[in-house]
Image (cartoon, rainbow, N blue to C red):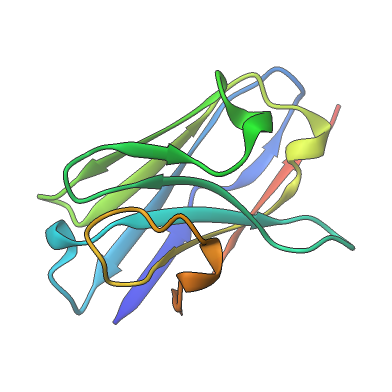
Length: 123
């Protein structure tokens, strides 16, 4: 089982980035995938999740209206589109799953994690 996040980088405030989480080793289309982030000196927090039936769950109110999530089952990939980025969005972004079809209400349920990708929002 592998989850690999990519697409991070340096972007100016107000800019956009699209992260990708590519999965392998399991039947991707049956499972929800969540995005998390961890900023320096802070605890990891949930951002967004997409279920196996394409419903979205926001874990972070701070990203509503700016971030969206989507999935391409043909490519075993989940995307996180991040718009209107702010310096406080700077973090390492991770994707994860708990091998259930619907997004867990409790983020602590996620137990399979991929390596993260660094997002830095700075002028």
